[in-house]
Length: 421
Image (tube, rainbow, N blue to C red; front, side, top):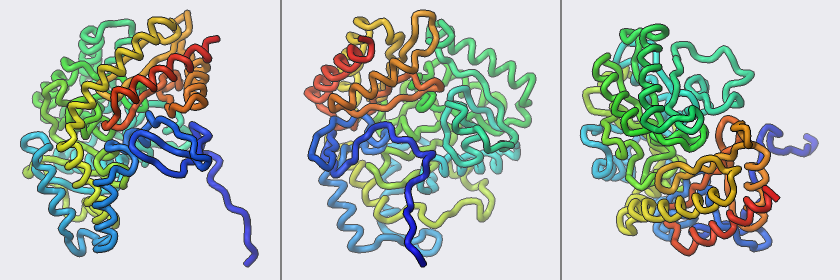
């Protein structure tokens, strides 16, 4: 057979021109050994930084012992240890776990469980949410039409309610939260009867939708309505979990209790692993054969997750995320004060967004893109997000230091100045 040239899909678009050769802590090095301060963390995945020695050692040791033990065929010790260990960080009452590979797959598992456990078919998601690219997850995703376009018809049974995006609505956070709850009640009266509604799916902070935190009052209102109507509250902590927001879980800022929690990204410091957690009595309502998968709970990924938990605890990374997040926010606000094109700085912990807005209030996508590219040219890796791509987000690893935050702010100030010159 003749050899043919093969390339990656043209639908894949690179956010930076960097060809990574190695990573170390908060830095990525290209093949010319140029160093970049990485404030993308693999889109929030490398929570303990690139190649943390503890995670590397745990993975190497496991690779030499057992790479894969399919966990509906045989059980393995790393999975059992991880299941037990997560009991120390999961919300009280969430005492059953189901492991899969990626955030989308965990979202699908949560949806399946919610429908089977309640016997109801509808779910309510919120405007701007990103829950994944697989068909059911995409049906609940409205962070941008690129996730939904050209693949319809999407899965039925999904209703979309407003998210309390205060800056977009020109409201305070409390006003936006009250508005969104009123609209949710209206949706329950007009679109999805409470008797048909299995669950509310919510991100504590919108991810791809623009790094918008949900007000505590809004999350409390969701909990109250879930209890009142017999629906489940499903909290998507794929990006906000494992210390990212300065608390171990993003929903802890509102002190609400989820019925199902979804986790992925920072769980294993770069190894593919995700999970859903639910109470025993709820997980027992999953129908036989509804949970499974070839690679879920992979032994190497579980070993990396155990090491990740050790590092987070022993190095105080949740506290560091809160402290460095405040330092980073202060720097971002200083830059925004000097450049009115940045209309809003928001987020929690080390999950912060800068929204670029034109004088007439419309999204300024071009300036955001120029600022992101200029930052990369100056050695700082950043990503954009939001439906219009006009939010530049900062998600450094939880190990980030004061010096690295300050260095990033120096670059960011130059990048914004370049973009607005």
